[in-house]
Image (cartoon, rainbow, N blue to C red; front, side):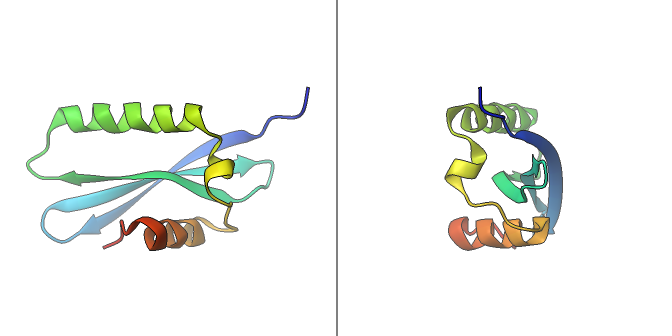
Length: 93
């Protein structure tokens, strides 16, 4: 059996204008394989508690469907992973 990568979760938050925020669901690949943004979710006021449930379900569905490192190349830092994600998906501020 080949050695499986491990993933360490790192959530990063960005406040946006207009009562809105983005949570970047980042993963650190272990051992020492860099960082990937698995997904980014927007949260707006007024807050809907069901939104978090949907985000969590989508995170796990995406994670289980395809290995994160197969979807996006790892970056050496969290900041670079977020910049790459934002350039691909436009989730920045």
